[in-house]
Image (cartoon, rainbow, N blue to C red; front, side, top):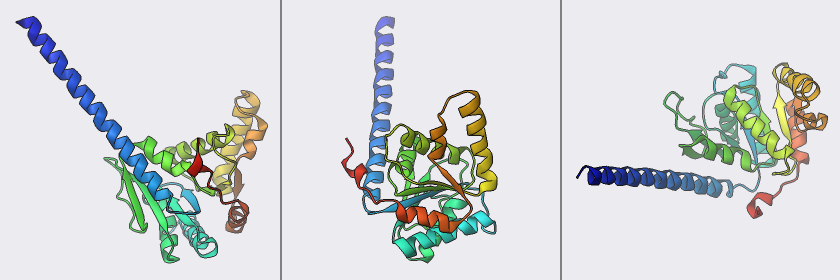
Length: 232
């Protein structure tokens, strides 16, 4: 009797476990499908990322807002962000002022702020990895403002994809030299020269600038590609 009870409990636990796995797989599939379908609506886009803590009165918020506005007005590109406050809000806000398309790809977190109100295309993700796939999968250029762990997570993902040839070389533009020059010095002095973990040419994958004119010039020169719609 006890043996049968233990077998029944084991079977029940297995069924519950397998059911949970199927739920996770279904949710992951749903988030990826919705993300790909959304990105496919935009013939060309620029992804803008940065800190969720940047305030509306700070220079980088104002810059991100102006940049997104120019991207829409001068290029008619869509703007893609992480959908939250700070730099993400600024970029969605600028695109909205220019009456352009902007996507906010937000994440469900217990302590996170609500999604900003400026994107006219919005998806909320349960999983960081599905959201990051969408944020880093396809864009004509990636612009990073100063940020924290999340911003660096997204930045290193893009750098790795370019370094390994998983995506074509695209402009990766880091705005605010007072922040990013220290980052580059760390990569050069420790990762490259002291430990040899990256090559000197890997430091050329990204560019640091303070000029929105430079950013716009690099975006304008970048080819519009549909490689990701035909990925193997």
